[in-house]
Length: 115
Image (cartoon, rainbow, N blue to C red; front, side, top):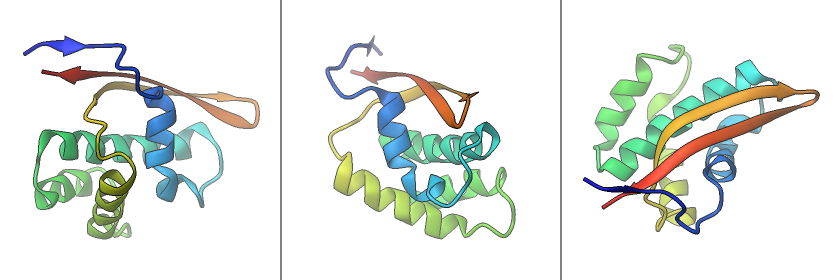
């Protein structure tokens, strides 16, 4: 497998924040809250890019989220976002970092395409 960087696509940090918007919209912009939402979104993103079934992605996410979260609904929502907004973006997210910077959360991501 060959991995390439510098895809010409928008920065993955911007893409994952846009992708995770349904998870981030109603939470305070704090590192802890955003980290949880972004990590969940990254798990779904990588699962979809890998071709993993929705049920398997849901099972994996359920292990890390509170029982009150509608994980299947979350996975379906993010699957629809991926298919409608990011269908041609097949990058894997290798690393995701968050850092509180005053009133906002800075996000950095390492990603690449496989061939």
